[in-house]
Image (cartoon, rainbow, N blue to C red; front, side, top):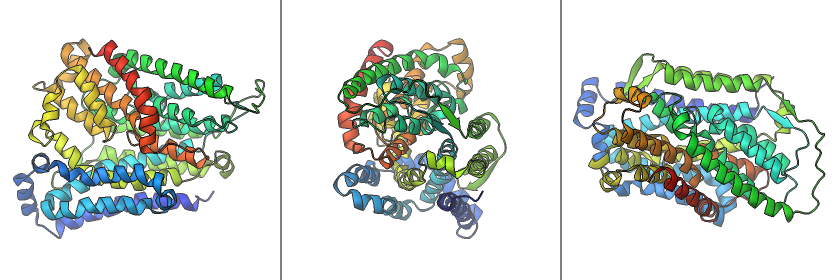
Amino acid sequence: MKLPIINNKLLFFILVVTTISLLSTGVLAHDHAPQDQQAEAVHASDHTELGQRLPLWSAIPFVGILLSIAVFPLVAPHFWHKQFPKISAFWAIAFAVPFLFAYKFEAIQSIIHIYLIDYIPFIILLWSLYTVAGGIYIGGSLRGSPKVNFILLLIGTLLASWIGTTGAAMVMIRPLLRANSWRRNKVHIIIFFIFLVANVGGSLTPLGDPPLFLGFLHGVPFFWVTKALLPHMALVATLLLGIFFAVDSYWFRKEENIPDDNTDSKIKIEGLHNLLMLLGVMAGVLFSGSVKLPEFHVIGHVTMAWQNITRDLFLILMGLLSLKFTTKAIRDKNEFSWFPIQEVAYLFAGIFMTIIPALAILQVGSDGALAGLIEFVSTPLHYFWVTGGLSSFLDNAPTYLVFFNTALGSISESEVPGMLATNGNIDFIAKLTAISAGAVFMGAMTYIGNAPNFMVKSIAEEAGIPMPSFFGYMLKYSLPILVPVFVIVTLVFFL
């Protein structure tokens, strides 16, 4: 079977960005500066020192792209739909040009690092999960009643820790949309899906959400987070599912022309072979965190590890195998298109560029422009809300790592596995639990808090559901619903 042309465009985008990054590192390293000059530049001012010197206002382009995502779809939806790649590029360039002019080789290193180490693997993972999950069709006559929706959300929440929030969201969103296609009032269903499946459900293993995987790479035992966060996740999921059932029951009673409940209709699943590719994606991710292969120098302080390159190539292979062996008919039944992943790829290309100063300032802790915030954080309550609050708008993986290191203090990272296995440092364990919960749970606070949030929004809009704007999502849903739930979590666990 020939690969769809539109998919080739997206894959071409990923490969071109990768190739340009690799070629540019070679050009910059070999043509523009001798190795001894590069070494002097790296020794003279490393990445940490850059974070110390960057002013807080250097994050203005990041605020600009967030405001663009929030405002343009509301006030100029047609313009946004056509021009959002250019708007994303505008903010990226608005930051990159003065950044390169002011910091030169340090800026080059930072930009290459964010794209080569963070953005490209991020997009490859999302693309592979989106492609594979889009080949799994769950059919049958499901009527979107409160009971059915409750069960679908529960299944997705339980799946998320084992196949990742993105994997679970992409597998479950289309059956949920089909079950509720007849309903007039269904925006709240997608919102709670984002809360539970795209975020809270990923809190029980390192496979569930990127910050927990980062903790696994830094010595946190694989199943420690299962034991540590199970009570927190159970409380949050129970509260949210209870609220959802009440809200959905209210709106269900207002529906007209409710279809018959075909309880005798069998559920059928097509494209089951994609489950093997889905397991392959998870195995590839786990491989990169469990196997240590040699690293090689790219430029300055930027290095790459062969296990990560192997993972990314393997994930691309899983996506290509899914395309090869899944019929077009199955994807057509899923109303599968490439627009949601393209939207994420273009927008996050700009977000990752403009997020550089915010992350660099956070990473230097008390030596940077956010010293007051870092020094304020001292108790599990602080760690939960500050880690979570920043994770709502920034990349939650590096935010997790910043506060992980802050909580460690003088403790060596090599002591972490033994400490967590024996409960040897109650204070650190309490802080790490709060950091983990905040980073995962509060990704649900905004559309950009976690990657699947935006993808779910885009898929729902393609299905004709008028999703709220960036600020509408927060003001109408996440703030009034999630914040009280997180206050309860704080009172129960973090005081």
